[in-house]
Structure formats: structure tokens, C-alpha cells
Amino acid sequence: MSDVLRREFLAKTAALTALPPVLHALDVIGDGNPSTIADSLGELVEHYARALPSLPPAGAYDELLAIRSFSGAVLDRTKTPRKADLALQCGRLSGLLAIAAQNLGQHATARLWCSDTERRGDEAGHRELTGWSHLTRSMIAHYQRLPHQAADLAAQGRRYAPLGSVAHARLSAQYMRATAVTGDRAATAKARRQAVAAMCALPTSVPESGVYAITPSEDPPYTATSLLLTGHHHGGDLPGYARSLLILALAQAGAGDPCQAADTGLTALTTGHPTWPTVKLAAQLTEALTAAGPNASTTTYSTRYQELRHAFESPTEPSR
Image 1 (tube, helix red, strand yellow):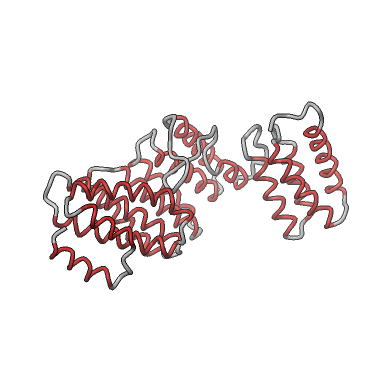
Image 2 (image 1 turned 120 degrees about the vertical axis):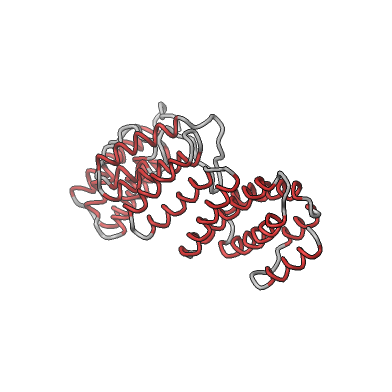
């Protein structure tokens, strides 16, 4: 970076945020070389994508803002073939800023960064960035209780993110949840089939932590939640479904409805093949129902729980 550009950048950024040490390192290592800076920005994007969920939102936003300002200044002065690479990293940083702003509850700011993500993605010829930005937009709509808008945004995003990508799988899962919130069972069932297909199309190795990750599973994220939202209380062998029901039952017990909690808990314990984490949650529900006092529903649930616990404590205990 030239001395003139550095002074311009420092003057612009000082009013926004204190320069973090990572930016000084980037300046020294890059030494004005766009290729080196692009590679270093790629490393930083990977770091923040993994670390963002565990970082203080405000601090993470300030650091990302400073780095994005730096990278934008470099991009504006770059005429080399690496300009597309710099544009891509700027877009990825804008995507992270959108997520950080969303975490702070700054939805208008998040939308602005989503728009910049899409512009830089177009500039770099990387359409998947637009898919990720639509996921952030859809999540914002979801938390603003706008399920139809959330579903539309997720559906649009899938058209940009190719099948087999983490972005496509995450968008498919989000679309399934959004349709479930609308109460459209037929659309949710179709969305679930599409989400399962998206999970099956993933490569054998995918990021499993961070904001651009997904946990490999037979079932897409939000499957249990979607089934609960559409009133399906029979998840078969669906992994995690029984645990989701027990979490719901604990909430019902906490809200002072032990009968409903016991009924929901009983459904959980008669669903599929319970695992050890399910038994541990079932024990917590038993304690909550015991404190509420006996009735027919809680007695039936307690009997089923004791049978299940005995099965796990027997010499032929199922695999954990």
C-alpha cells in the first residue's frame, strides 16, 4: 500500500474504529502487494468465519469493519489480474459483517452489507456469495416474524448457490423451516424432501463449525423444529426429534402446564429408539413433573420413563 493510500485509509478509518492489531499485521505483511494482501485476506476470512459465533459481536464487527475498509481501499487502487480475488475477499468480508450486524440486532445495517456482498460477488464472478447473503436476509426476516418473506428469500438464494454446496444445503433447511412457520404442511413436506436431497449432495468433507458450516447428518438442520411447527408429533427414527420434544415438554412444564408437558414427553419416549442424551433430558422432565405434583398424565409418563431408564441400566444396555 502506498504512503498516500495508507494516510487516506487511516484518516478514513480512525473515525470509525480503533485499528486492531490484525490490521497492522495485514499492512506489514502485505507491503502494498495486492496478491499477498488477497491471500492474507483469505486467511482472515477463514478465521473469522470459524470464530465469529464465539466472539463478542460488537468487537467482531469493529475488527471486520476495519479490515473491510482496508481491503476496499486496496481494491480501489488495484489494476492487476488479482482484482477479482480482492473483490471476492471484500465480498466475503461484507458477508461476515452482515452476520455480525444481524447478531447485534442491527438489521438495516446487515441488509446494506448483504447488498455489498452481492455486488462484490458479481464483480468477482462468484454467485454463491449472493446465496449466502440471501440466507442472512432470510434469517433476519425469520426473526422479525415474517415467514413468507423468509421463505421467498431462501428460495431465491438456492438459485444462486449450486447444489452440493453448504450454502445450498443451509438455504434449503432454512426454506423448510420458513414454510413450516407459515403452517403450509404440503409445502413443508416438499421443502423437506428438497433439503434432504441437498444434504445428500454434499461432499464427504464440509466445514462443521463456524458461520459457513453445516453438520453432516441424515436429516437437514431444523427438521425436528419444522415437524413440531406443522403439528407432526411422530418423527419415527428421526435423530434429535425425541430430544426436541423433550425440550418442548420442559418449556411446557416451566410454563405451568404439567399435563401437556407429560403428554409431549410421553410422545418423545415412544418415538423411535431413544439414545442416552434423550434419557438424560427425560430425567430432567421427570424431576419437573414430580415437583408439580401427581396426576394421571404425569404418572403414565413416569412409568414409561422408569421402563426406559431400566433398559439403559440393564446388562444389555443399548449403545450410547
